[in-house]
Image: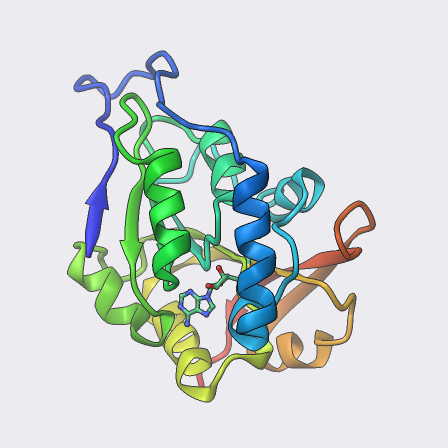
Amino acid sequence: MADGGGGMATDGAPQEDMTSQRPASLSHHFLFMRKFFKHRRKIASIWPSSRFMARACISQVNFSQAKLVVELGAGTGAITQAVLASLNPRTRFISIERDADFFQVLQERFAGGVGRQIELLHGDVSHLTDLLRGCGVQDGSVDAFISGLGTPSLPPAARSGILTALQWAAKPECVFSNITEIPLYYLPFYRRHFGSVRFEFVPLNIPPGGVYHCRHAIRV
Ligand SMILES: C[S@@+](CC[C@H](N)C(=O)[O-])C[C@H]1O[C@@H](n2cnc3c(N)ncnc32)[C@H](O)[C@@H]1O
């Protein structure tokens, strides 16, 4: 299910930021916490990412050059909001979330904005290849994947859905930046799947965590 956001300047020139973004509210945060206590493994985090975590997660994206950025596991939009604040109006931005209640929050917060482009997809990353192909993404065209997923502890189908999609969709220098709340614990997992991995520690988050910045996915 795709729900397109706003448009772009027809001449491709940067245009004024007129996105109808709504800020996160405390009710979104408590929704997140309730979901976590109900479905710990699926939600993977007790509280949305802090702005420091969001900033770290997008720190490797070259927003002046990127043509296509994809977010996985957007939740209530903590990182989505940071991407939108940095996005070049010429960049396509696709954001994917599986949980129906979170997806509704994302729609309320971000859809319908003009001036910036966000395409919200309600779907499961186990089918990431189909989701991306379904909205016209071409081979080797993604500049950055921003992931809020607990990738290493996802069910095998979802993990392989992500890694398979990375193989065909990523540009050679594409970055895959994934948040974590257990600093460095999953480093061996990321090293197994990527040729280059750098960890960035983010102390100011609930709980303190970090981001794995990965490049060159290894064929699975
Ligand atoms: C740790 S939360 C991160 C949320 C948000 N990005 C943040 O940083 O605050 C992980 C999110 O991934 C979503 N998720 C988990 N498994 C998923 C899947 N297989 N497909 C799509 N989204 C998924 C969850 O519903 C949740 O919103």
